[in-house]
Image (cartoon, rainbow over the protein chains, first blue to last red):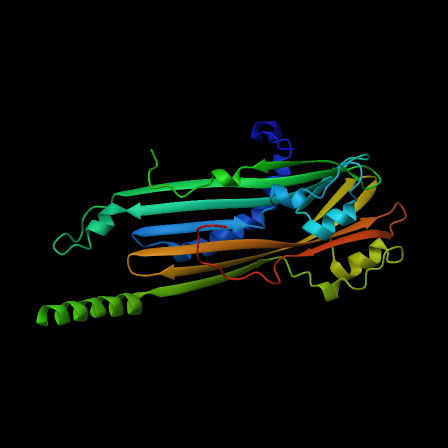
Length: 158
Length: 132
């Protein structure tokens, strides 16, 4: 089952953001190494993507929590209530393309010092797979959010 | 013939300049201490208590109540970045992975279940930003 992105809203947004904080910290620490060139192609991703085909083995009402963990590993997040528990597997990606055309032109002999003129485009997205269990740890349902596929390198920001 | 030699020489010179001017950069960062499997080997389902786990692993990063259980979540993140930096452009990638340990407790504060995932152990430095 695949859910529209809008239906996810940001009901669990706070928890996603809290998980995302160390990722931002680590990415922010590593990215400055990239700055300075006329053309910059950068990508940041966190965790491993789970494809729909990898979740085919889950049969609602039959597959148990240990079976899910054995196949997919530990989730990044567990949330729930008394009667229901949800495991979330979260993958984030950011793709950034920066071109400073002025700096490129400046490499031409006689045109050094050409003013900066840069275009930059960034795409980010998240793929989330979640599976819900009842009190007996039997899977009841699962769903995908596939926003990472929309993250692309793009030359044109307009 | 002389023109061909001159052109080859120029190409070789340019190639040599590009190679010698090219650079690389690596970065590695950690968030929280590692959760190695040998550090959690002491946890036994139905035996180990919550206070024993806390004494060895410390306070969890997060406490969740789900499915009638108290769940303690210990997290470790590791980031690795690699960049290829020739003179005109740079290409790089930052990859962040997490290790997650969940300890499930019964009402009596005894370990009922453990989920452990280690994604950082075999994480590699990757610089190619395209594709998967």
